[in-house]
Length: 325
Ligand code: T6T
Image 1 (cartoon, rainbow, N blue to C red):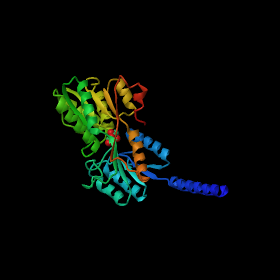
Image 2 (image 1 turned 45 degrees about the vertical axis):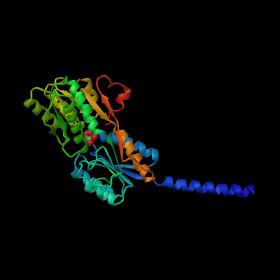
Image 3 (image 1 turned 120 degrees about the vertical axis):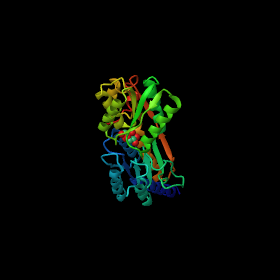
Image 4 (image 1 turned 90 degrees about the vertical axis):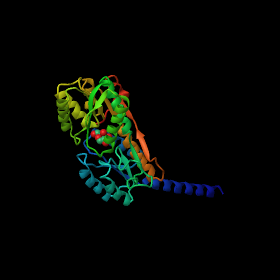
């Protein structure tokens, strides 16, 4: 009869509702471990991650060390693993030194996705090697970024003269790749440029500033510098200013903190290559969520760049890529 059929239909719909509600009731906890906490790049990444977490009803835990260093990052990671989150997103601070610590998470059944930086060679899910267990690598194309920087610097200095790379330290996947991309592009297409020895500053802008002045003291014909990350670029630019060489020594900066706007407008920095950290955080969380809900995910996701200079820095479509403080 009609009554019976409608009762059955009602029961079916109640149980369908109950099971979908149950699925949605599970609040996934996703941890994001940045390279360091006090860096506008990772602060912006966190915003994108929070936006995605909100969209899927997940809880985001953001926990990191105060400096970019495996010695301080590993204990933070260990503490996160002990809390057994549903997934870990991490920017490993060293290609090799984070393999074993992350393997512990993997062995504990916690899915690992690396954001910004990678471990091993960054090629995951191959079944070969000891560092291919992360599910995905979500980041800028850093070799390309280095090549973009080389072209911008070569143009700024008129394709001629001595330049160098202000860098963090060897062993970090991102900044290693930027330096490689920069040097390869200079060697292949800019014969008038001489690339001097790189200077490593340990992510200390003050050190980068002193190094700029020391390189200039040894090479009075220095014409340009590529700052391979936020602190390297900020420090190198400050060094140029302190040496009274604004406009004479051209600066191409990787990353785009708010201070870059003033530096571009004043002519201290010629070009800033903004990464899209919010995009990295957003797709990091979305990938973790997709995996946790039974969907397959890409083993690599490449995010974009925005190239900022004096001509476009005031354009809202460009300025929206300036990092959050
Ligand atoms: O350049 C970013 C990031 O991509 C790199 O891995 C480390 O340095 C930054 O966080 C900027 O400080």
